[in-house]
Structure formats: structure tokens, C-alpha cells
Image (cartoon, rainbow, N blue to C red; front, side, top):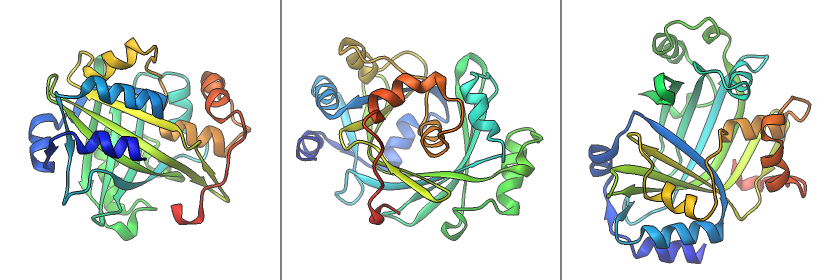
Length: 260
């Protein structure tokens, strides 16, 4: 989007190694927001002067693909819907521009902190859990009884921009062009929908404060939960009914064939 590209071009760039050194935040507080492109532009304007954009080889927007693993009865989705404190998530994340892939295990710890562990993974295995990957998930989750039953249930594709909030040493990710895929179906998010996630050591950062001033509040939702609610419409999803109605009420569209 021209406006986004212009805003990013005006920010200093930061290398991946420097970003990780300053804000790796494997244990952190996550806040998620659903917003529109005009809101995003307003947030970026407020953050100007104290923000750097991840820059790899001159590129500041990157293509991601994530595959999520859950049980046949969607335990991970249900525990998130029910607000369980010890819920977890297992996924692979493919960085399509570089060809890298990681297996990530995320769990909610004390004081609602997000704890994430990751391991390098083969790209050709991104849609399945290998024995090594399943063992890593089991060790990370203290051998949770659901790990042996995990299987791929949904995937998401999107374009991501990552920012460093230098004032608060926190990260901000901006996801556009979302596509949700599952067994026999693929659904595109509205083109003006933006998912903004902030990852901080604790207190709200610059993006959180800007969004609050604009009347946008954090939501207890994830791209995975949206994907499941859209791809499996018979499931109870009352917790996100307002979100789904507001952003997908006009009826979902199919993803372009090039999204996968």
C-alpha cells in the first residue's frame, strides 16, 4: 500500500540481529488489535521519530506462512475460547522470502506472559510434525497429554512488517493481506483489515498508547482463532462474534490462488 510504503521509507532501518539483541522478548506481554489501514497510518504518524523498521536487503515487508497444529477436537482453540490460563499453541512459521522455517511453541505463563520456544525446522516439513518436532513440543510443554494427537488444522498467509519501538524497547508487527486456509477452503480477510501485535516486557508501548487514544482496544484473539472460526463455522465462537461480524460480516471472500 503506497501510504504504508511511504511511512516505512521515512523510518530508519534496523538489521535483524540488532532487532533481536534489543527486543528478542521470548518471554513477554502480547497485545493484539484489529484495525483498518487509516488507523494504522495514524499510529505510524504518532510513532514517527522513535521507531525503526526491520530491513533485510532493502526489503521492509515480508511474506509469512504459518501452519497450526491442534487435536481432532480442537483443544487449543477451545482453551483459548474459554480463556484457560495455561493454554498453548504449536505452529510452524515459514519465511517465504528467505526460505527459512521454524517450529514454535507458545504458552501462556504467569501474569499472562507469553513464553515462546522455537527450533529450526525443514521447510519441506512445515505442514507436519516430525518425530523431532513433536518431541520438542512435548519437552517444552512438560509432556502435555495432547501433544501426541496434534495434527495440522489451519494455515495463515500474510505480509508482515516489524518495527522496533526504541522508546520502550518493544516490537510491533503489522500484518496485511491475510488468507486463512483449511481442509477444502480458503478465506481472504478484507483488504483494509490490519492485525497489529505489540510485544513488550510489560507496560504498554508507543503503539499501544496511540491505539488507545484512537479508541482501539486490545482483543483476546489470534489469527488461529479467527481462522478456525471462519473455516469451521459450526463451532461455538460467541467470544468473537462481534469481531467476526464487524470485519467479516459482508461475507468472506476466497483467497487468490497465488496466496498459497
